[in-house]
Image 1 (cartoon, rainbow, N blue to C red):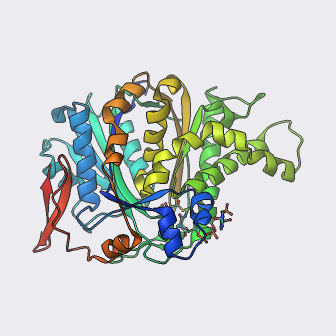
Image 2 (cartoon, rainbow, N blue to C red):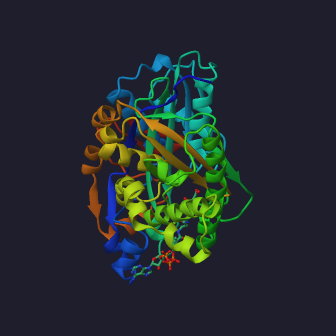
Image 3 (spheres, rainbow, N blue to C red):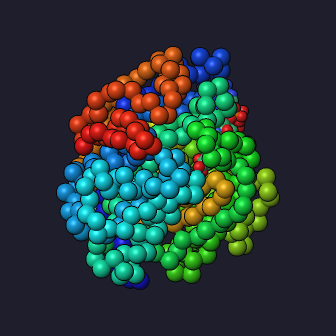
Length: 416
Ligand code: HMG
C-alpha cells in the first residue's frame, strides 16, 4: 500500500439559521460565560425539518461536485456517515445518489457508529482506493448529522447540524493519509445513545467526556507506537505529539478539544522514557496553554459557529484549519482524533497537500456561513417544536436541497 491516498477536496452545507449562544444562555438564566468560555461556543446551527440529514448531505455533495469539477463517472463509492438517518432501512446515500443523479455503477452505503461513522466511511474509502480495488476511481464520503438534545437540557448548548462532503482519491490535495499508522480504541459503553423512535439523544454527559478521554488515550498510544516504529515521530527533546504541526479532535463543543489535547499530552508525558517527574508536574505540563494555542486553537473557528455536527465535527475542524492555514501547513504532518460514543476512537495522521489553499479557496466555506440568518431564541424554540414530518414550505437556496413532503412514507425533496 504505497500509493498516496487521502482527501482531495471538501465542501460543507449548514442549516440556513443559527442562534447566538449568548442569547440562548440569557434565555436559560445561565451566565453567558458558561457557554462561551466554559464550553467554547459562539453560535449554534438550527436545522428545521426540511433540512434533514439527506438534504444537508445532498447539498454538501452537490457543492463538492460543482465547485471541484468532479466527474461522477470517476466516482466508484458513495458513503454517508450519519447517526441521524431518516429510515431504518433505506440508506441516506441512496437518496443522495438519486438527488444528484449519480451513476448506478457506484457502491453506496451508510456507515453508522455515532460520531465515528464518518471516519469509518473515510477509512473504508481510503483502504478501497489504496488496495487497488477502486481501480483508480475516487470516492465521496459525506458526514451529515443534526445534533439534538432538546430544550432546557444540559446538552442544549452543544447542539448543531450540517454536513461535510469529502472527495477521497489518489490526488490528496488537502491531506495524504499515513495509511497503516492508525490507532484504535473501542469499548461497549452507554455514554450517549438515541433509542429507536427518539429525535433527541440520551446522554450521560460527564461520563461521556471520560469515555472520550479514555478512548483517546488508547487510540493515540496505538498510533504513536506505529509512528515511532516508522520513525515518523521520535522520543527526543520534543514529545511525539509535539512533532505534529496541528492536532484536530472530534469537537462536540470546543472546550472538549482543549481537554482532549491535555489528555494526549499526558499520555506522552507519562510514557516519555527517562523523564523524572511527579504526577502533579505532569498534569501541569499537560495543560500548557502555549501548546494548545500552537497546535489546536486555530482549527476551532467553524465548530464554534456551528456547534456539534456529530460525524462531521472533526471534518469541520479540518475545513476550519485548512481555510486559515492551508498554505503554511503544506508539507506538514497533522494528527486527527475521531470519537464516536458507544464507543470507538481512531487516531490517524496525514500530510497537508500543496494544493490545500487553492482547494479551500475554491470551496469558499465563508460564503456558505455568510448566507445564514440569525434567529431569536423564540424562533429557535418554534423550529425545535415542529414535527419532523411537516417541513415548512420554504424554497431551497440555489444548489441546495430540502425535504418538502412525506407521502405514503416516501420522502420527497426539492432543489439542486
Ligand atoms: P453541564 O454539566 O451543564 O456543564 O454540561 P458543567 O457544569 O460541566 O460546565 C461546563 C464547563 O463550563 C465547565 O468547565 C465549567 O467549569 C464551566 P470544565 O470544568 O469542564 O473545564 N463553567 C463556566 N466557565 C466560565 N464561566 C462560568 C461557568 N460556569 C461553568 N460562569 C456537558 C456540560 C458537556 C456535560 C453537557 O453540555 C452535555 O451533556 N453535552 C452533551 C454530551 C457531550 O457533548 N459529550 C462530549 C463527549 S462524548 C462525544 O463527544 C460524542 C458525541 O459527539 C456524540 C456521538 O459520538 O455521537 C456527544
